Image (cartoon, rainbow, N blue to C red; front, side):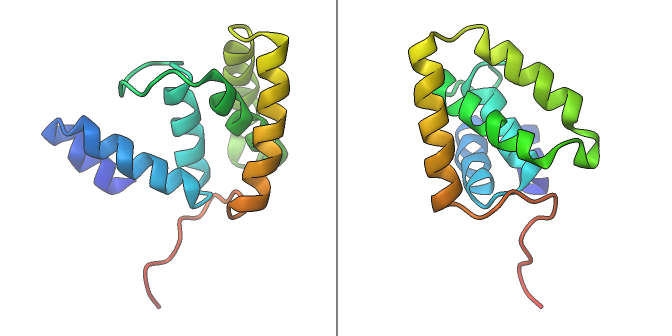
Length: 117
């Protein structure tokens, strides 16, 4: 996530998109919430293709953390903002994607992976 800040200062949006998605796949909570918000265009800061279904799925997963780290209200508000743009069929697809993500990615965490010992 620190590297993303450097890329932002350099104006390298394409690399930011790439690294943010990789960080989200690692289960790091900050990356998952940022990635979910940006792909659902709430807000649209990184020019990702719009993906309400996956974005909402990620916020659904973040609800599992409860209010740990003080994120509860943010997750609820942002998730509702995304949900308001969706059809019932999209919401159903999102539930399926959330379940699939849970089985194919590490559990969500507030701590980034260690790079060494």
